[in-house]
Each structure stands twice: as C-alpha cells, then as structure tokens.
Image (cartoon, rainbow, N blue to C red; front, side, top):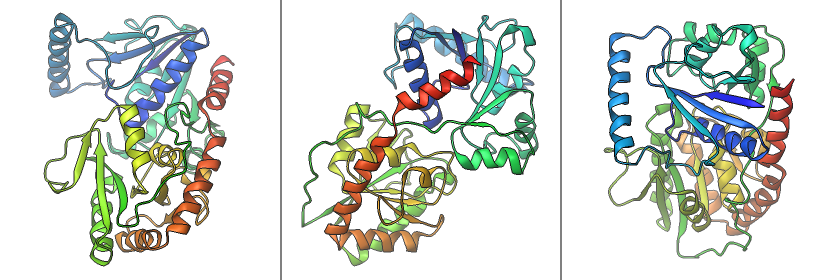
Length: 357
C-alpha cells in the first residue's frame, strides 16, 4: 500500500515523533511510505507565510549543498521517502492509496483532493487551537475525512462537541526496545533526583513544574532537578539546573533511568508520551490529569495523578514520594509492569487495519 503522511513540519515534536514511529513500522511491513512536507503550510497563505516558505526553500537548498539534508532528530528508516513541496495541493502530491492529514492545516488541503485519488484520513492528536483560532480548527473536524484519534477525550470531543460519528481510537504505544530499565532501580538516600521536561508552550505547564519543585525543595533540600527539552530555554531554567537539549533517544533513556521521579505538569495534553517513557525506565511518575494518562496510569498504584494547574498539590506529591522511598519504589515497579501492556506493534496493527479499509 502507498501511504502518504501530510506533515506540517519535520521538527521533532511529540506528535511528529508518533508519526515517525508509524512511518518506520509501516515501511517495515512492506508498505511504501512517504512524509510529505510543504514549504508553505496554510491553504490561504499570508504574505509572511509565503516569505517564510521562500526562506525555508533557501535553507533547504543550502543544507542539500552541504550534504546535511536529512532528518537527524529521529532514526527514520532510509526507505521512507521524504518529499518537500511548495504546498500540499493535489497537483503536487504524488498518488497514494491512503493520505493521512496529521494537523489541522494539512486537513484543509486533503479535503480538496479528488475522491478517486486515494482514501483520506485525519489523524488527530490534539485539539490544536494553539496554531489557529477555534472556528478554523473546528471546521477541520467537520471535513469529509475519516477521523483517527489517539485518546478517548478526543473521541468524546468528536461526538459531544461536533456530533460526529465515532472516530477510530488508536492509543499510542511505547518503544520497549528503546525505553527500558530491566535492572531494579537503586536509590541514593542522600538525594532524590527529579526530572522535568521543558517546553516553550505555556500549556505544557513547565512554569508550574518549576514552582512545584521550588516549593518541595524548601522543605526537602535533598531534591535535585534535571531538565530536558527540544527547545532552548531563555530565562526559564535557572543556570544551576542541569539541562539536556535535544538528547538522543539513547541518552534520554539514560536520563530517565538515572532519575527517581518524573514530573509531568501539563495543563492540556493530547496524549502524553513522556510519562510512558519514564514508566518504562522505572521512574515514579507524578502527572496532571490530562491527555490519556488514565489509560495507562492508576492513581496511587502506577502513578500519582493530580489536578492540572496546581503547583502546591504537585509539591505535596513530590514530598510524599521523596520522604517515602518504599512508596516510590512500589509505584515505580507497578508502572514498569503496567506499561509493558502498550506496544507500537499493537497500535500499528490497528492503524494498518483502519487505513486498509
């Protein structure tokens, strides 16, 4: 089967990481997979959109000349065809059996394709109102595309808000070949290592996580903080805190494995992959009640789940685990067992079945 993912970027966001996982595994099953990326994303571009697209072309030309025209942020299978086009108009995009829009802007384009050009799917990983206004985003949900969602709350949104037929639900998996910690975790009694992910979007709640750590450390000086992220922080991360910028998957696994507690303070989340990765590496996870956390975490058994936007509650949870290593170990061990139920093979089986229909 010829499968084309219409992607808004090839930069490694959480959503793009999921798409790359599917692309790798589908090409491994013998499908012809393409990642189609436009220099100009909006269907009705502004002057600044067009100028940005022109600059992207110039940058790509320079990178190609230097031999650096590859996606380096993720180990993509070399058999995947990366196609860069001026925009996602049907006249530019090669024929495929299944086209998969992966963002609201790409859904606009896909809806204009002739019906005889291939099956059309809208892979929805979040309610993307940070990129465009509610009215524009809502309109993409109503387009005549077959919807696939990654979390029950998105499935409910399609039914309750938009009164649409039930979307296909396919939960994300976890790469247990990459994220794993088969050895029992050893704890240092003199310090508790806390891990936090930095993100520039306020909805990810980084400021709340940092405040929670500050509150907890005031009562428990043995707490130590490490931060990683795909964006370079400006003044958000204090200089005394160790920060890892765009760590490789292998280094990220080692960071998880070396940490005792993973703090996930997101305010709004589509799914939430990092808590899964942390659980697979035997971190005790403290997470806000967002995204799909309830699908793979049980409060007080495999994680501690708290309300969003409450640094004080988060600090209480940090102190609770820091002062009770038996509980921290129990939650860590339970999570390590629970997360084994989720694999990309299961997710790809379902995805492959849906797009083959």
